[in-house]
Image (cartoon, rainbow, N blue to C red; front, side, top):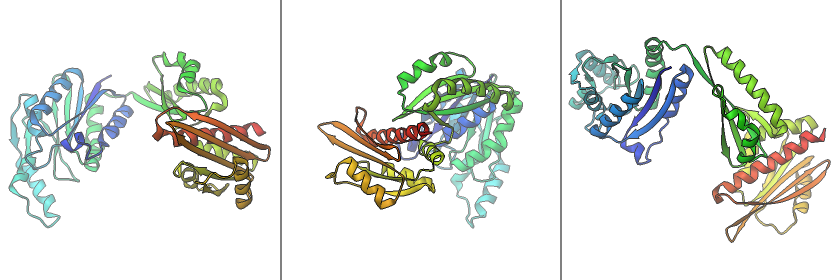
Length: 384
């Protein structure tokens, strides 16, 4: 199985002026091909540093993919850097220049002399024509593998990757395996406690199992490498069934499923409608419920003034929105202490919970919202 590294190029990326979306897209593409990605990095617009990064990556990986630095300006040094890393010179390609001129002419413009830089390609490289931009891409084949150089503009990169690079990699490296990912979502259990329940699965080689925590939710990632998608699906399904058996109601969904969506599913089983109120969350609860557009959601209010008790507020919301269920969350911060009050009013009665959050203050609202939704979801599930 070939290994790969990704190098994104651009000083604007290093300075945080531009978000790097290319790495994620390329990584997901490689994953789908069954290629093992071991390292990613970002390098500024400096020919020496780019050449050094590429040289080192070529020593570690079979496939090195770079993006960025293929424009016409002086601070687009990738072509020269790739040539230097492979001991090659840059050759001018008249046919590429003709393509560039024709593409620029579509916009009613005449190309400037500096745009000829884009028609220079390392000697011996495989040229990839760019039908959606002016920067041609190219592949330098090495004794071990290949260095694939793509433009940094996301849409251009994505087009060339899908149309030219993927078929090249499949043929060059005889790629037949696939890697598939299934992500399960768990709430109401901390990462440490969850690790104790599924730790033995994390030690297995294939499928692999890993945990990622998100303020009240923990993701369980199941990654499988197999010869076909069907085989991968079967292997993942076996592990998923094991995990679901162990975790029961703590596992609320998979992949694109959300906690709020799972909560509404539980409410729908009971025929309950929902209204909510919040204080100190800056819309964290209200906005998530509103975005679902679920027909069982009756609406909610922000209650910045907390002169009434939780029970009194819940009853007022119940009457104002004529809902069978009310969920309320109040977050208050004092002396670096973050106190959370949760009220859950259902046809079965009312519960109040007082909690303290010890994490970063900016994560408190999300943690409180997830904890409250999970509490309501479990009550609805157990009501039957």
